Length: 412
Image (cartoon, rainbow, N blue to C red; front, top):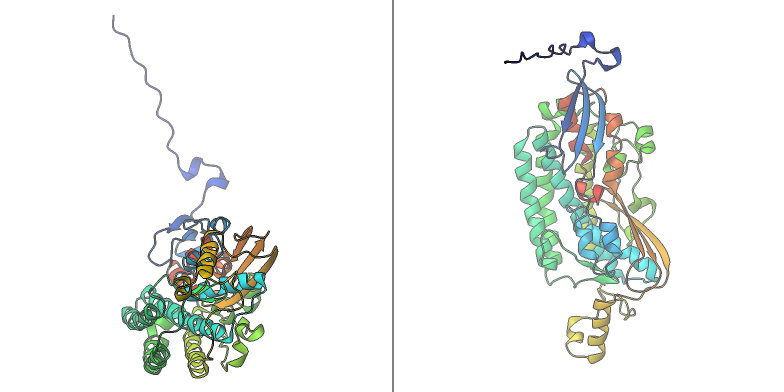
């Protein structure tokens, strides 16, 4: 005997008419990233939009977290140098030197004047390289392809210089605790001076391609305005802080590596918009060239390592190959690390993206007990929920490019 089947009544159609008022919204949720081409790294920003206007912006970070600080606790001090390359991977020469100086403070070690001058020189070259990439990528963000080709051509010349200096183009690992990996090669300073001479006219041409371009002005002027008060309260640093009119630069305010010997200016912005941040980075490259020329002219002679720190600084290779004592010393430094006293030290410097700092805690021995990295991009991204609200979606791309962050040091 057949059984009759009964079917449930269809559910009522869900619509705004039969939802509680608190669930009804005309706003759109949009996720930009984490692989969006205009986010300068693996960043995701979760937006709430009212039409084309941003009403809420939440940066979502952590996609590049590699546990660098924890890795440092399981490596000797010199073994961690290559990991600093991967923080701001656009300026590894600067990262290496900041980390090495922090450990040297912990060890109570003073490096020779030549080492300090080399660190100033390489850090300023890294600043130029970093800003060139930021400028070229920013041009692509707002639709200017030619600037990208100009700036990357100059970066290739810098990479050729880096390769002659330390054998690597990108991940340099040049600094060491107590000095640098090797001395400047013969004729290298002359090549740096020649680069500076040809670079400034090309830099000005690249800046001129954007500075009076009608489309670029429409995309950047009065867009992403960060007031001086907001820049300070959100902890912005580097060109983003100076673009808002705050003339803070550790190279001037708290000189290190002998920066007080060099004559240069600190460019600052007037309105704190995307255009001001662009202008600040352009002028910073000119000031870096100014510093580089002074270092090349006044490069001191002497050792490129601290000769009186035998138990901390790795011996020269020719001595390792000819002296049993130096061979044993090298073996102990490589396997156990330099034996540093218990204590703590913090050192920060004016890196291309802003203030990069290393806080090192030692309980004695050749491995840090704790290491904390203070990264500039992490602070700079904190302003996004404030500066993006009220902007159009197209303006967000300009704002992200003007902040010029790198996620390798933000996530660590």
